[in-house]
Image (cartoon, rainbow, N blue to C red; front, side, top):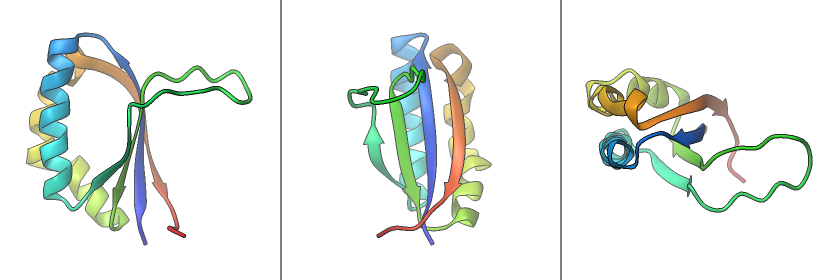
Length: 97
């Protein structure tokens, strides 16, 4: 069953963010993930949540998503994460209709 990694991002440094994004994208692809949402415009319909750019990545299953998150490939992106951005990151078990 597919799972989703959802990230609400605040960009701190654009150059570092571009480095992070390129490294993260390569690591996601290496683990069979793909982007469903990658930072498009957000329109608030209800509530007080004021998210930054949102990223949604689909992985084939939860074990693969966890392996990606703890992988050496993704660790290369994490080297610049704190300079590049702050975020909230969640893993959601889902169902694809």
